[in-house]
Image (tube, rainbow, N blue to C red; front, side, top):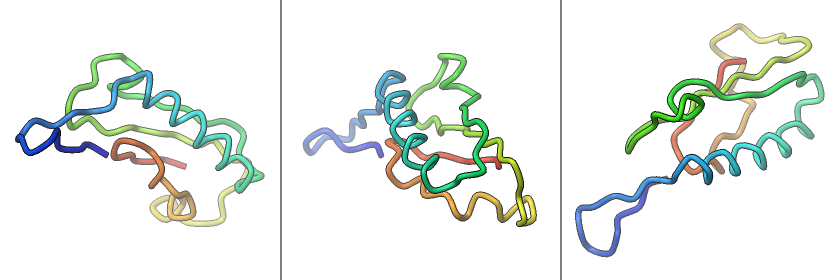
Length: 90
């Protein structure tokens, strides 16, 4: 998550390389928990390369089967280890 730099009002935001690295590590761990996972990727500003301070990470998970309704499918996925806010579509 963004952090204040010392006592100033300046925020630092993780760069694309750090976010990409974190997503790959996260995907590795989540893949172990969700055995029906067929593919995982991200789209939006981080994928296009035009992210900025405040940008979130848009993720999509392709699964073999989903028993939950669409709006509840992402609840079993832990996004807290990612360095920026993230939204997941399953």
